[in-house]
Length: 164
Image 1: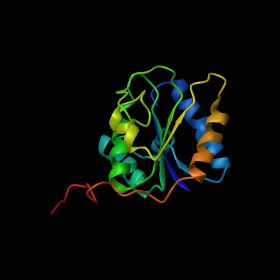
Image 2 (image 1 turned 90 degrees about the vertical axis):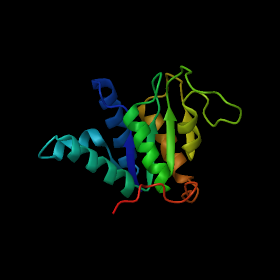
Image 3 (image 1 turned 180 degrees about the vertical axis):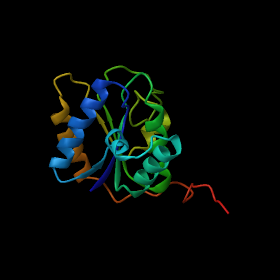
């Protein structure tokens, strides 16, 4: 399955964790687009080039993995989730953070994150146990990916802006 791996990638620890989880997903037979790695092959690091590369990869994916850790989910991850939802790409949300910080409304799928992210997710995994390392997280993701329903359609059809 073609996967887009969305998550924070600004610290050495985040990038190392992302690489470990992505490698385990690839070892299970998935093709993982990891933005932090993809930019290494670019001739330029201009904003528009990176933006287009990432948007095209989200659109081309068969599922999006969204790491929703932190007091507030990473803004780039939120944007990528919005694209995926609008395009009908299933979102598998993973939260390893034990802190709460969401909306916690009745019926909310994952109360420790923003309502819009929680409800857009096709599958939600909450694994705050510190004993759960990258390999165990990847195993949980692999199981969730194997049990995804048919891709959902976003309400109102295609939410993309029409251009001339």
